[in-house]
Length: 385
Image (cartoon, rainbow, N blue to C red):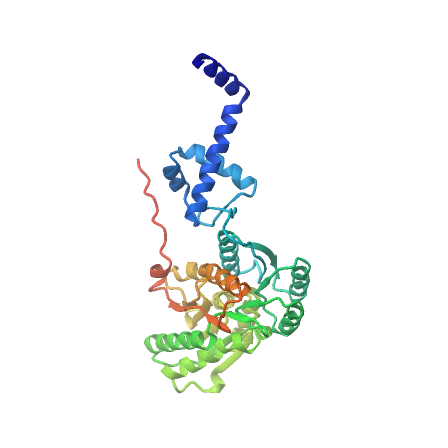
């Protein structure tokens, strides 16, 4: 009998049956592990927990990835997209602001990852910083029968229309950063974030220019509406707490549209018409702040400015690591953490739980002096000889 079994095994191996069955068993073991952990796991952790070698794990995980059974996070960790016996799967629409900004990309990555982790079916679309596309995306969500929409779009003029379309179908909404009527707001406390920026600018001016400034530039984004604009109002209030003598004649608002090139052009035009030497700049976001900084560099007047942004996005972090950068800070919102909070809020709303009308993220001032505390650089491996 033993010889017969041995012969059957040899035949099966010759035709690949045993090998294929073993691979399926190993794939199931990996999926069981990912489902039990319910969180992302590194390849090393998967190998240790299942007793497989890393090469085998990598081969199987790549196959599961190709078939959409598992997903890979930005940190090269893995999660399962299966939800066996773990309750309902919700269908949520997510409209990303744009792929242009690092902040927006980080929010999107977090939302997509957290939705997969929670077993939520996410219909993800890109508003592309365009009101026309945002409205088209709303119609797509309606056709797809989503249970809730997470809206991240910038143009306040169409906010009421988007809200009305969703309300007619009794679809609740979460509005990220830009308020929409009847939506739960998720994002920064804009006035407080502005106060943080203004106080830091004032302290910097006192320490470096003895409190003497020639001009304060506020780089605005008018199409986003008054609430995001209160970041800049808060900046002025915070600056005057430190330097009360800053009068209105020194304050200049420019429309940078929240974008690098538009802000660069606006500030370059200002510098070409003015001979001021001590200019503080507060921008509504980091791309706008970096565009302003580049304008000063274009005009070879970088030493004449001190710039602060909002968002604490990756491109601002890189700039603040530059020696003697005049980007003296950014109010950090930590977009990489948005996804988990937003998806949790969305599922609570779908389940009919009571939620507040506004959920404010915790912001912190990031500066060249503390940037490594918030975003430490990975240690570089030393080359061995």
